[in-house]
Length: 137
Image 1 (tube, rainbow, N blue to C red):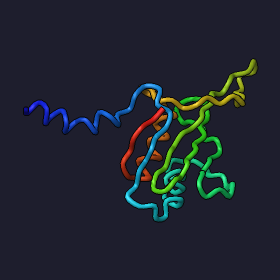
Image 2: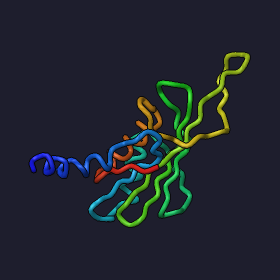
Image 3: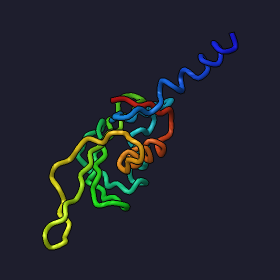
Image 4: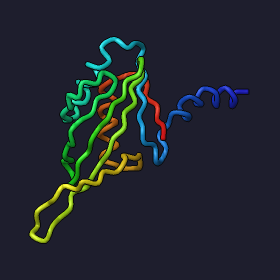
């Protein structure tokens, strides 16, 4: 009986845990008051520059350069009700024959795996928003 109660207590934690190849972070807030502003501030605090594309349900950023490796990351936040879905794209820089780095035009979807720098940036944004965090593919 005690084992069943213990398993039931940890079931919500296990169901929202990060899994390899998750690509979306879903943040649920108790209310939707100033949600656009909260997300925009969280993106700016993570050193992203938000594009002003006049869409009130989607925030997109310009590419942000990684500090620890040669690459870029773009964040996308979709707002719906009191829920924010955060995803992103990354690209690695390429080294040419003269030793200069060239930005790549091919962006890949950000996926969770251990020690992913781009996923850490998206998690920083999600934690800056606050609320309950869940993950999806």
